[in-house]
Image 1: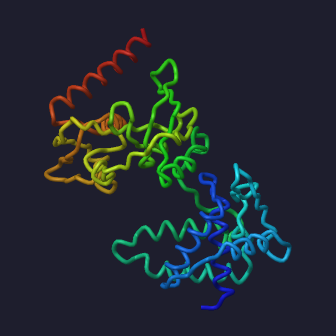
Image 2: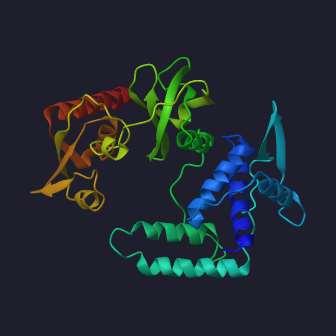
Image 3: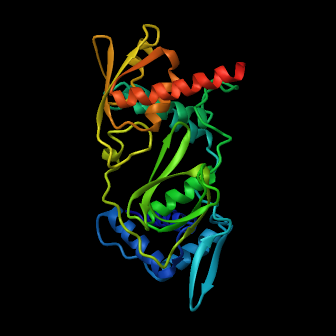
Length: 335
């Protein structure tokens, strides 16, 4: 493999290190990382020297290189390297006409294979790429994706993702809807999930040893706890969410069979957009096997008079009680 190609790979590897806001890369760290990545790429032991990396940094800083804003920050007797601003990247260059044409060809290829079973997700990828990169000839937007641009807490999404992949325990200042004052939780972060246009963090609560979910829009601050060791997760989150709708999973609650009866007008909608993966339809009834939680309760109530809970009796009673309270509320407002 040509030496100049090795150099291009090293520049990209260094670029990734310098833009990482979550880890300090000293020269020994850079040597170890670049050596390991190049060895894996080439398929043979490829040693990267200190002198070589220092020359790479000099080139990346130069006008003939990328004019990269690489800082050398002294910490004790050692120096670590980073970008200032950290958002800089040598890869953030405008697409030229040739690159745009290549992407169009890739999207056309995706269009040919997106109908293959188990690859339906490519439809969304293809559409988002075309829309986001503005590769179509349309001058005005013709498609939008569901999102809540006014949602609070989205600024924590990327930092939390980085803390998860770098296995960092966190102190999270959190104020729930029913809490008078904020609480600081010690959390080992594991998983991020979006539900109903809100984002949730799942992690191990250091105090009680239980998996806890925290809504990002209720987080007030996050801070790494570098002196405390991170506890790895043994939770399979595919299994964790398998028996629930949404994000609330009471570990001690059993899976139950829920039977719902929909009106003729609403039934086709529910059949075309299943409530849960366990949904079955038989003889005019919808059958679900899952844990009853507040998300299921909210969804059932959202159907209004178009649905009746048949079983279990406890769930039917709960919905009946809420409907009764609503009736009293509206009756009282008229008097």
